[in-house]
Amino acid sequence: MATILVIDDERMICDLLRSVFSAHGHEVLMATSGREGLELFRQRKPRFTLLDLQMPGMDGIEVLQQIRMVDSKAPVIVLTGGGTDALELRARGLGVTDFLRKGLPLEVLVKTMDRVMQRPTSTMQAPSTALAVEDAPSPSLDEGSILVVDDEPQIRSLLSQYLSRKGYRVRVAPDGPTALTMVAKEQPRFIILDMYMPGMNGLELLRELRAKNYDGGILGLTGSQEENLLQGVLDLGAVDVMGKPVDLEKVELAIQLGCLLTAPS
Image (cartoon, rainbow, N blue to C red; front, side, top):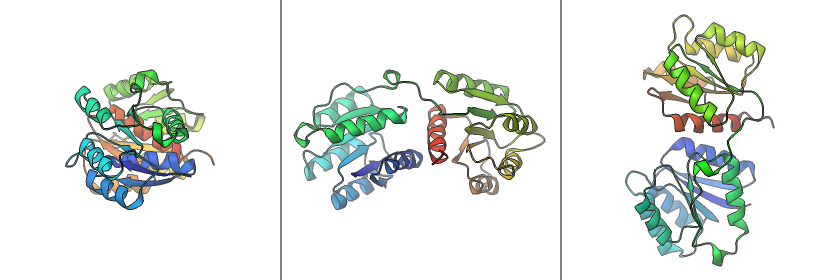
């Protein structure tokens, strides 16, 4: 078992990585800011660190510079969705162990970490070229599909096209009653659910799904910040509630996390 430190300002990414590596027997420390991460690094001396480059306040480059002052050979994997060539060059100059793009299938990340752990400490630096999303195999759900429930045709089309291109099997429903019928015929592994729909709204649909023992992952979508509604969705076990317009990369991340958390034991 290794101690892994994840430093990323996006809480969902921290939760996802903690779930992945905890399932493989590792101890996972999380920090949502550079300063918090650096303090944990100094206190706990992790086996290796997963570091986001672009964070508010102390960014990944600053954190990496400070880590190198503490331990010049500490294994650090940079995991980022928006690194520029200049940032990548600076990170490489500071001896990162590997450089991965956010959005990689989880199995690719796990294999990379396994490979890193097998390297002698003396060879932990000078990585090869970064592994990009398009170099990785398509993600897949072991069983079931994704159901998108939204009364807006544009949203259904956008999510269906994007996720289909990513390798997922996607079905769509324009309203709550249609979604319930579809779930009764075939339970999806994950549901993306609009909170504001005419007739049966998203919260009512989610209550019905839970009453019928649906235990798959749920992501809520909303154009409102009504606190009671958001809390009600989270209380019913949703992975997250995201605002519109939709951030497609974060939607895919939520799917990975939801499927991981609801995977059969």
